[in-house]
Length: 241
Image (cartoon, rainbow, N blue to C red; front, side):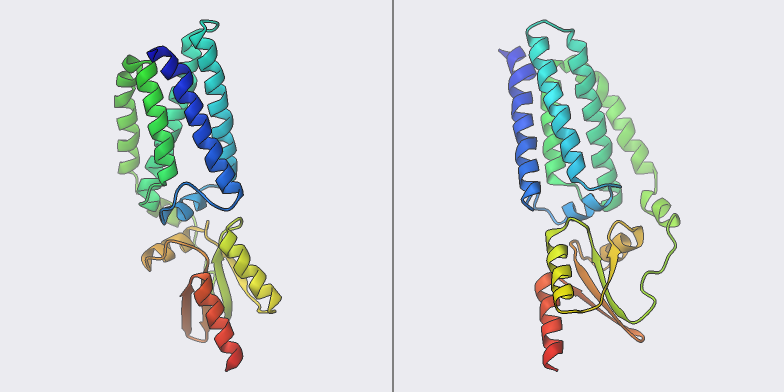
């Protein structure tokens, strides 16, 4: 029974978990509701939906290998290799989230929990042997000042002239709604991608965890407004003045 749980039952539930998240992502929602999720997505060099696709394909392959291993049609080592590769990947991803964004995506924690459960049930010996390696990866990340290193790679000022600047993320539903509003009302604006390290550091410094954020530059004054409703109210009030 334990063998069936580790090689079929848990991988199947894991696949379902990833399918649910992918469906929610495609409908502009998510299993993760923490404020750090948006900033976590911005650390990727590509749209986070592709990471969901990668995870889904990996979990499907893991389930297939699990079924074949359970039926003794292939060596169980193939299942273990993919499982521990995914586990290392997730640990590095979560470690980077923690040490750079200082907040961990709850969905990613769920992925890590599933992978650890599968690893423990399928081969506790391999899992125990891998713990020192997992620990060394986290320790190495903790030794690196990743935020400072990233900041040194980008030295550019985005807000130089008077105008409206939107710190946003392509694919963000609220950002898309705001841009549509500005275009409809013929309000000029400049986009600033939250993936730029200066944007992340700035928003983290003023304790804003979600986009979009409007910055209005007026001579030597900057107005910062966070949240679509507040931004809409700002422009609606300007029309009546």
